[in-house]
Length: 170
Image (cartoon, rainbow, N blue to C red; front, side, top):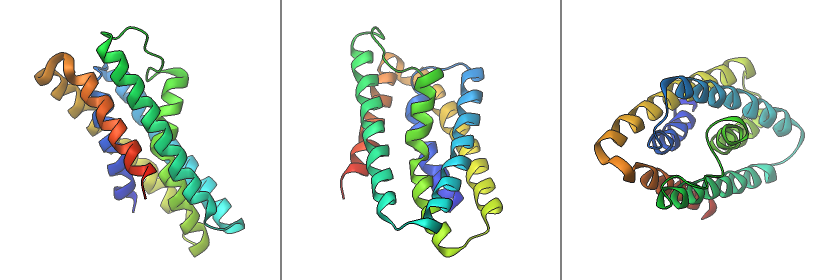
């Protein structure tokens, strides 16, 4: 389950890596995404022990909306040659990005909470796999950017839009 959730982070990080980030930024992004993949399932487990499945659907739609917003913003920015970028993967932009990628972990945490899973092992695995796969996606995206040049950010934005739409559609 941790690998499946981490692959989602990998896919989105692959698109973000096309923006052209430094390794130090990639390191921070991976740490933050890993941290969010620990916090969100914990919140999900606690909520899952208290409430029903309705929050899982809400979290999926919220994550889809955030990814759609980030992808649109990235695509528009690439067409303007990087001018007017609203969100960057630092500060609040990094927070929004990590939140959107980790909302599916909240849903997974809901089900784990209802099943009574071992919390520490589950969230540690979620965080570790998501962090490692995010780093892999970011590095691969940055390498691929060198091949496709200035269209990398547009492609990354389109990838994020695709994942956002996928989460929003049933």
